[in-house]
Length: 160
Image (cartoon, rainbow, N blue to C red):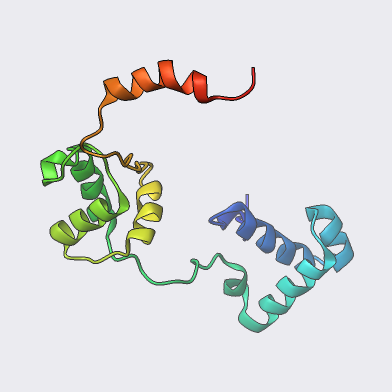
């Protein structure tokens, strides 16, 4: 059995583009290719133009543009381990991970500076979640608050 271009594709989208090129080379019309692959004629037209200008490589998958990550895959795995130890193990009060705290750990351990807003995307990419600490006064008296809710609040509340 002969190897086709589309069988060498790295993902299904690339395979579809390469299959369109194969069908074009067999003499299929663009409308027929579009119908067969469930795409628009405009997409087929753009792919064929790219294939004429750049060859088969023009239809191959290209990595998304953007800056290279500042943490390697090994460093990201290490970060996951560091966060698993808990916030108190890194000198923070309480076991709550916030963007600022994670950014601080990254700065200390890897000497890489991340904006706290970007840290949330990085942490989600690791499959973890951040917590938002509840802000409460240190001198808060829970017993007094509960007593007020039970006795005073019903008297102040209007309606049934």
